[in-house]
Length: 349
Ligand SMILES: C[S@@+](CC[C@H](N)C(=O)[O-])C[C@H]1O[C@@H](n2cnc3c(N)ncnc32)[C@H](O)[C@@H]1O
Image 1 (cartoon, rainbow, N blue to C red):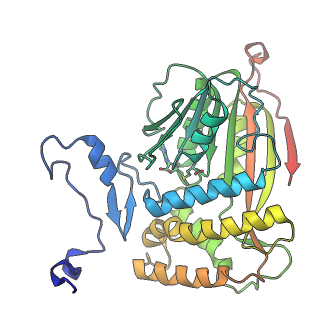
Image 2: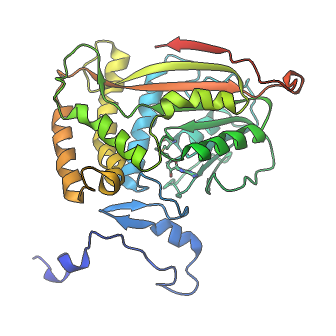
């Protein structure tokens, strides 16, 4: 029997953002719980710790997406002894930081790999993690606030942080990383291009998938958050004073089309990554900054349905570009007062 009393009342479900006052339950409702509740908008939950909006939701669907993204990265580097990072930190790093840790997958795996290290993951939203290795600490904080960690880090890692900051904020983040690493320690960042690409002409140029990159990039520009970190991070890292800059480029296939088994597996997981991620990646951007006027939630859902249909086509040999950059803070005696040499080593996959 259907209980009509719990049927959704359309008047109760507005498309406007829903703010929950901190004191809606009792006076003792903690700040913690208000952070957990977040802000509901267009059916998705967004963080409220930072006054500045972050463009991607922090909800279960997004955490699933982060998990899938982590798996793609792991599969593509599964032939490496350490698929988690390339920085040569030695076998006994003591302090590691993961900025914008999301669901904490990377931080947790690094903590497992280095049981003697303390691995911190920091994010605007508390991750839904039920078990963690004892040497992993997931913290809720805005990385743009003053850093209060006392120990200098051996490695600071960021992955898929594109769109999190404007360019002045990026400079602040890199500077804070520099100041909080010990001499000779490493920064490492992985970023993905927002464009869906194809090298062999199998994706017709008028396909809706070709509109995705330009659409979200243009919205990012209008929002003051360029989505081009993949192409700018190396220069920014250099500008912050890091040396020994190295990079590796990847193609993350989308779908099972690749001949090579490793790429085929990565493509299958990346397809799921896109299916679960797309709506969250574009909802805020298109409903705030879409053209010719901000899109409605329904416009975005229809657009996503079309994209999903096309993504399923195994004849489209599509991929996204991803780049990993790692670099070292100079040793004290290297700091002679002049700008460090820009030495870039490139590896292609
Ligand atoms: C696209 S997610 C990537 C998550 C994770 N690095 C991964 O690869 O699975 C970016 C994360 O950065 C976090 N973030 C954005 N701005 C931040 C800030 N100012 N301080 C801390 N975390 C931030 C977001 O909340 C989000 O969880």
